[in-house]
Image (cartoon, rainbow, N blue to C red; front, side, top):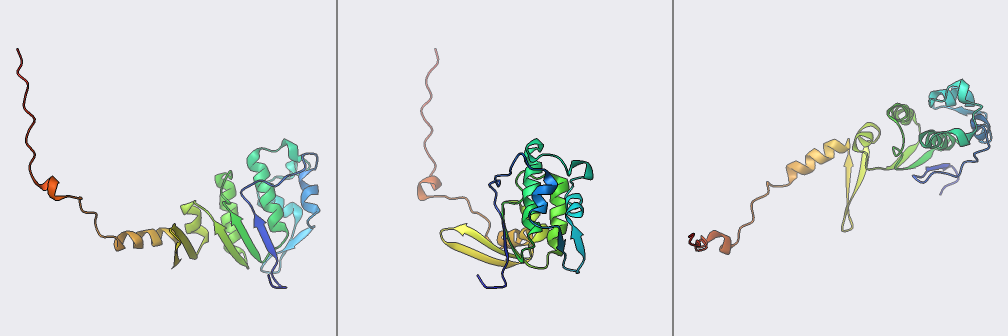
Length: 182
């Protein structure tokens, strides 16, 4: 990596968060504020509120958080480090709709590069403008635009599936003899 690259990595495996630390203390260990793309300084408290942690929760012990809240706190900790290259491994796992909306909005304003591994097609449509699609068999497609546009384009490229028939299928088969009923 180059000298100017500051990497942030959000893994789908939760970080080991100290259950005896308070939410605000956990983030203050990273920094007191972040500088956003527009130069605005945002405090830890403001970041917590932006990511749906009301002031009443800032003193809460991490051990009392739900699984989704812990994932959200871990994500916020990665973002508080102010990376300029962000690697997101299945970032939508265990996040609720409200948090996903906040994350999408944040990434929309993110000034750096975001590389996301995701199976969440809706999320990819919202945040990605360039795609690398790993199709298996060492085949990788590159596309510009939304994932749903890529899928639609792929469907128009594939000819309509024809029913498979063999010569044996084309020849009528003899009906099995019927058993006599007494």
